[in-house]
Length: 113
Image (cartoon, rainbow, N blue to C red; front, side, top):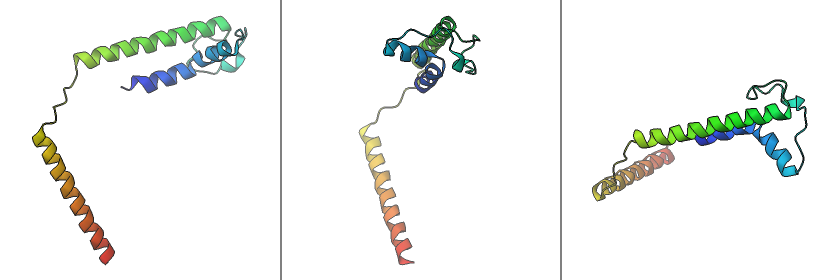
């Protein structure tokens, strides 16, 4: 689904990575995070540590809800993929064989010119 790369981008630019950085570094969040004031995904300005946590948790909730809705839609409106029968596999092999022959012949024509 598209939600994985979308959620990765949203969480990466929503301030969540800043919280993770300071947490993994063993430091507390600074009170004023002025370098994040121009970030459009952080909706509470000016950015302080409390506002950053609220914004990041809000985006985490949005991403989680999108994931659940996406999974529900996949199950509810799933398009069933027809099974590959032996006949279809043979037809596929035949089509690939014809394609390879055509490519070989066209390659010979190019070399002959």
